[in-house]
Image (cartoon, rainbow, N blue to C red; front, side, top):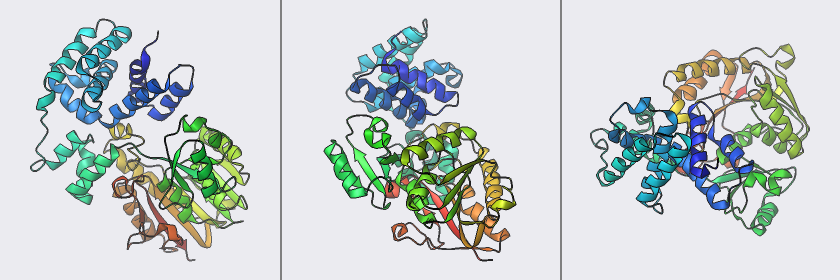
Length: 447
């Protein structure tokens, strides 16, 4: 049964509600067996990410036109309504009658017998389109930001306490924007300027990243970037500029020994190897064997041969053979991901405030274990893609209070200028420099 881009979007959102991530599901739909033209591919991407980003505002309005318990509604029906409401609120080219008719048709195909419910709720929603009411921004700033800028209230309240109302509003607004398509140029395969010229010749608009020495921002690609020859041949790797900067400030020496303690699928691992000129040794450890398999495939495509992988739990001692043996140790810790909500908007709907203490405890344990591995004079780098102090400053402060063998140092790279605070900590934000939100601390082992 051909359910079209709207039906496919509903299927993806249903899977996301069951715990999946949108990006791999979209990649599968766009590059798999389902035949879609460029217009439908663009529509599918817009519906999935747009609905996830603005889900809070959509739900705020939809629940006012449903007489029963909106939160108890069947997931698929609720996602049909969200997609319809998103089109009505944010896609000017879609007339109201088309929003209703397409949504009803999607319900008829996927949930026979529920067309009347979809029709009634959306018609009520559209009748009230000119009378949207949100909490007062002056008297209830957190509630207003949460409803209008589509973020969970508990997270908005945390950010207001840390950054203030105006900064939090700007941050949440930036989270709902479409992030740039940023790639890392593989130093082993290409130089940035000549490769930029080739990408322009292929029809793309290309800009140099303002901070990362290895990044490019791409626009107007005619085919999905992941299917391009530049990715297939290993000339570029998709990676946000802030993420690139973690490897840059780690500053691994050519020919040195590096431990990437929570490597995942290896975006930063590969960048470290490229900075090292593929000379030396990188030990990449992760608890997930499947991610390490992906790392090895990525390394092979990028022409990297110095990475050795180890299935290990970073919260446990890796063993005496790892002690004191590395010039650099990177702990890119598992975290809430609150700095990447532009790219992974589903995170804000599944993360709970009670999750944070557990993450903080794990991060503290991993960083404490990591203290064993650098040599004297070596560097230990702690990073997250979180914008919560519990996972960042608090973890580093606890570590330093327990480990007199380490002192914080400023990263030795001119590219980090302006991103390092007086406390020597590295921070980026979506609303300030257009990058994902990242945090890092560089610490030297002094004895």
